[in-house]
Image (cartoon, rainbow, N blue to C red; front, side):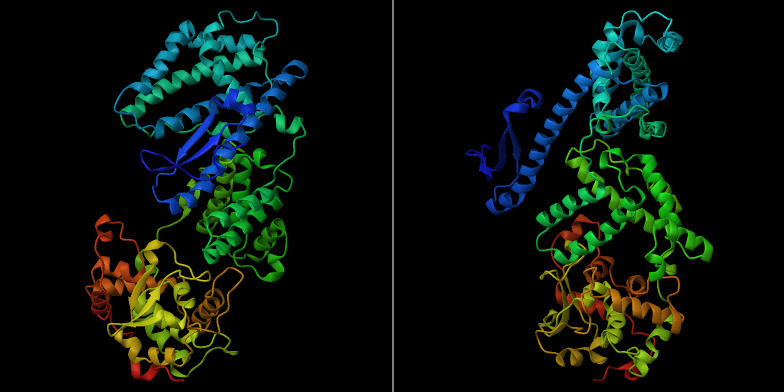
Length: 593
């Protein structure tokens, strides 16, 4: 039974802790009888909020320890009955994994005010005796040859190898799920190969010490598959597939993100798309079996998929979609989109790593080439110029009261582009507003942008804000429009919550299509996001200070000083009114019921 089922308050410091007794069956391996984790707070409400996550993380450690004990027992049995044999390639892969593990530790180390890291490998080589002598590389190579020659004698003086590197070799084999006896040539071959790695690490540590990170790169062969079958395949253990893992991940997200349903639903939907695609390509593969090569193959397929395909194509299998895309020369997913999907996939595998189900996230590092393929566009390529704005705000939407053939999005078609231009707000921030979010304080009309309901969301904490209404919006009749609605209504009642948890998706698609096909504008930009870029440019040209512009459109300034003090509504109002009017006659486009 656990010692504590709720946060424990330290009697002297007042800080709350999570305390757990280590189960008796794993104490010998775990090395402790009790686990204590500080919650780093003296506030009981905050402690209760943090407690479940910390409690579960300790439970995961216990479960991982039990799994390792079970694996170790099964490996020990197999060593006696049916041991594994390693090929040269297997040994090279395992040695590369050790190098990469140590390299990561070196890169993340904060002890480079001393020579301790370099000294570590120096000491290992000293303990290795003649094996660590840098002058006997030829002897090492010959030793490897001997180990692969059944007619040769066994290596002499293996005691130092076993003493210094035996634990490392054992850990690598256990992680790989392989049963290799310590007296076998395969095991000895691995020890000899690890000596080479230690020598390489000694040189690498010295290079990093002087700030040379260019030559210290991971070894790619570490991600390759071993020829020997790991324990998971031989033991017939149940396989946790990615779709099953994703269900646990979703449950965890919902548990620790209560009150953020809208944002969470969109995240889960986006992530489920890439998980479904991956499971289609690798339907029976367990999470533990997924390799870097699998991820690279999946990435290649994503880059060949059509973007926004019609329903008759979208319903096909991935490979059939790729065939259609090639045959019909359809536009493909951009590197930026593929990178985003791989990052979502990485988050799920990182969850598996946190639960000690895997040791390495196979998606890690897979987006590097994609990042190089993503070209940085100039700000002027992402915004509207005055000619575009004149076309937009002179269109039938503003001159003739056009709201689409079915008018199913109502007045949102008219107001969303105007509000986006004059406030720089994100389109979803505007589409989700209620009438009561348009407020009057000290004679200033403003929008209250905040996630104060389950069906409202903001991008981050800095996005909660008050945005004054530009005088032009008052002139155009925005307050008259607001007053035409009841106080409990949504600002745009015709907009419905989509399956992605957003109100702006459908109307955004309609306006995008209208702008691009009918008005011939916004062909190379994200139609609504371009208004945010336009706002920034207009604000700079109008002399609005950067920090004020950031506050208005919900950007983090990245400056700590920006978090000090406040930005009064009167200040924001005086600055936002500097923004120039849309380049049309306002009296020609004013709203009317």
